[in-house]
Amino acid sequence: MQGNYWSNDLTNEESDDLTLGFGVSWKLKPSLDLRIGYFQDIEKSSGEEDRVALLQIYYYGK
Image: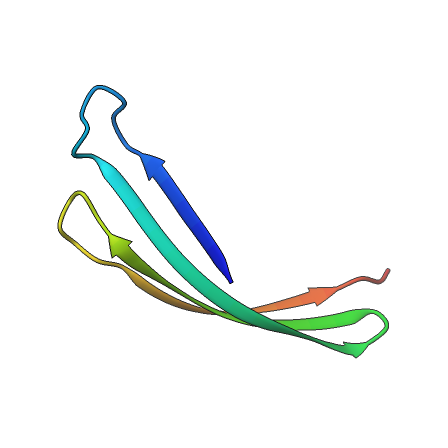
């Protein structure tokens, strides 16, 4: 689980955003990892919430 909190404008107290995400990772082979994740805005200063689902493949080879 991962959380991100940041300010888009340090001079404006209403510009804070909060995103929460989680993911899982599998080692398929010694040189291959698979990761699946989901991230969602909990608090968005612009009023538009984002949701992101992702699939990442990591290859550690030549």
